[in-house]
Length: 372
Ligand code: PLP
Image (tube, rainbow, N blue to C red):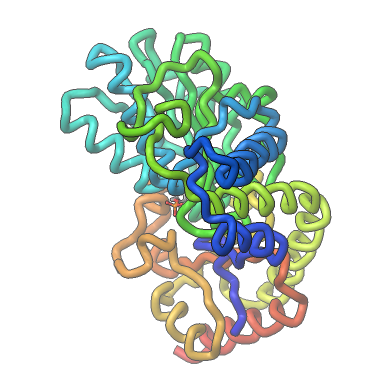
């Protein structure tokens, strides 16, 4: 099996797995209890919080653990809207993940006005576009750090600057970016950042929301006093520890992984160069190893299934969309022609991929697209 769908999820790292085991076996104390058996899990959570904070240049008390990217996005959007009331307006982009789009859709059904900014043909939301629609009533701007289908990296520093000039909070969905490119919440001017462990070789079902001190959000879950009373519920100790170790490991190896993955990406493009293939958004900065490619005249879904038959996992769009055949909203947002959009596949490489994998992927694609 060759796995080339790392934007959908990643393999749990050995180091993360080992760090999780004590909390799944003998150290099962509830972190909230006052007796000594609960001291270790409580300390483990505090350490994990500090470890994560240092990976993104935040303070430990600005990290709130959640169940993953979807929850973090929902909290950032609904939590800001509910704490500010109907007078605030929101802006998001038309190619966000559904976790953001559907959270915005839900609150617009409750009366909030949501406006949409569109990426350009290169998959970038420009400051000029945001400037055209932002007003002093805008309370929240939510624009992703890296797009999950195209891999394009957004000019977050510029987008947050303009948001702040209008007095708005700036949220970014960093699910695809955290652990893969440098993320510094101070340098990037981020007020709210969503992340998910399973995208950076951590466990599934755990993530975090960075909330800059002083940012007003209503609590996401009401209940006990966990997460300073903002996200109640007994903590997923093993998941939280595993996530922090996975993130630290990825940050330590960021440069090494980046250059390995970029060399694989180059090799793949070279081996595909004789085919009729279009790389989308190739002029924009993009996540290492995330390629959105189109084979005109072919159907992306059919390519996916034929690659699957030879043991290679790739995607057609975002993972959440892979059961639907309609053209994804992200491809529509960059105004791809119907033919190119339908022929689109997504290949997302990870650090464990090898040159041998790349040769097999390229050979597989050649075979699939030369025999209709
Ligand atoms: N945001 C983006 C950009 C994603 O790619 C994903 C997952 O595909 C999510 C949010 C949802 O994250 P999770 O699977 O942790 O809920």
